[in-house]
Image (cartoon, rainbow, N blue to C red; front, top):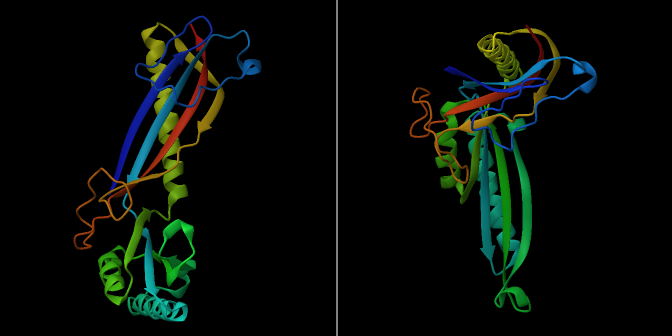
Length: 250
């Protein structure tokens, strides 16, 4: 499922000036190129577009924590749990290259906290990151990992593997939105737009919206048609913002 939204903000330069109602002061500035616009009446606009697509990739971060009074015992228990989680990913048909251990830490535990003079045990921590390319396996991976010995789900992030394609689409829509808005504004003033003099793109990172999972902060509901049990991946929103200055003609 794909959803498209268009937005545009305005500004008129040279002899005319206007500002976008409700524009945030944090927005990227409109393009300025004095050499390209010197002596010309101009109109500057910002066009925004977004394309929302179903994710086809998920990054699942699992954690294994163990403790014991003996360092080697804590480490061995951790290794055994990690091995069971890795065996689960193999049973689920997840490629070995999509599974990695990102973080390993061994540390003493102190009875007196920050003073650190009385060691009462040891802790072992391992983080496993799984790249999942079949959304139907998310629930089985999470439940199976916890049953296998993982005791943390640090987060689940969704993404699209066709980011460039969707970003190009959003960029083209943003250019069209800017052009349409410039033409509409110029017409209201009894003017018309000429050639584009300055074109710039503001950096806008992709965003994910869906059901909250672990520490991932989410507010929007997800898409109901992906068939992955109670976990609904939602959608990835790819945004583009284009800043254009046109010559303003009578």
